[in-house]
Picture 1 (tube, rainbow, N blue to C red):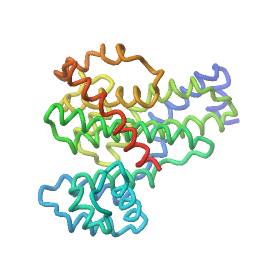
Picture 2: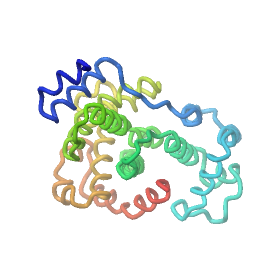
Picture 3: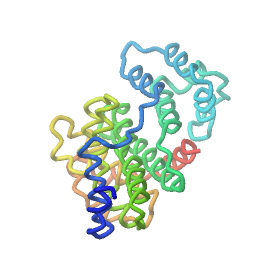
Picture 4: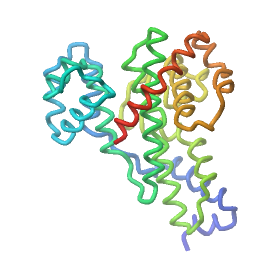
Length: 289
């Protein structure tokens, strides 16, 4: 009998699954996703001050499916083009390099996302939350007069470890022939996704501010060098949860969090952020298709 299975049988189900998960994390036995090639190149291009529209268009054109998807989104009501966008060059002219880069990164990441048979709805929910967090991070960065593009990546990728934790936990449960309660899954996702996300960030060689946002957004006071990004990501995560899961917490609970004061955001700023709800939901619906 497998030693792990023999030892785990002496423990309760939650303890068995959690112990096996921690062991796989500690022993580097996780199946980490590969950063889609186009996403990595677009991220690098977006951070290059000398990047131009032609280079971005040529990069997206390398993947025809990606190009078609990017054009579909660029033509959607979420981006409100004044006239139909007929080419990537036209899309850059209408939306700008930064906005088109964001679309391309999101589409590319979605195409290379973790697949877990039977958990498609869970993965879609995680993806919608990532999109909403990315969008809110941009709004917060604008209010704080901070780098919008960097904030977007922090928000979009802050919970990148959750699909990997979900896949690992479901694999463990199947191997040990154990039932998997949704409450246990939620607890393990919350407890371990930042740790796993930091491993992915290292594997993908993400920018340091994005890595710190992933690792520390829930405890941003511990962020060693990029506390602003971690704070903005913390707030974006809460706002995304608030609009996507209405019964998660009420308005007063949302507003009482100390992150607002730490970011020097006032009640009017909070109202303005909440006022973008419909716009962000529209964007999430468009990008998640």
